[in-house]
Image (cartoon, rainbow, N blue to C red):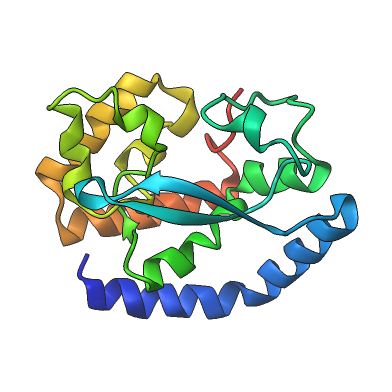
Length: 187
């Protein structure tokens, strides 16, 4: 998808989601205090690091425990509001600001943490050839339900096959999965 389309669609989606972001932010603040926005260093295109924005889904102070640690369905660090946000993937809505800043695209491999990138093979580093995305080929194939190595392979496959039509297919599947909740939360 072109940068112009990312900007236009990203702006439209952000404006559309502002009321939801406001409500979610209020619920997060009421439930546990602290900032409603969670910031984490992630790796983007060409290995450049950036600050990813998400809605906070865990109790304040969970960061040292949660960095790079899998979050299971009944993880006690996740708040009630956070469970709902994670189940619907709405915690990713602030990623739209990353899209507008040019750090991410709507579609591409999900950005990962620097500690994981250090262990990439040269083949796996190919996923860094494109902007990371809010959604991607691996996400619509099963997200957390598939092993990490398979997700990386799907990301490399996306890099090889990317096209406007594939991006539209991924966006439409993402919309459907978000509406139905199907396959979005780990079991």
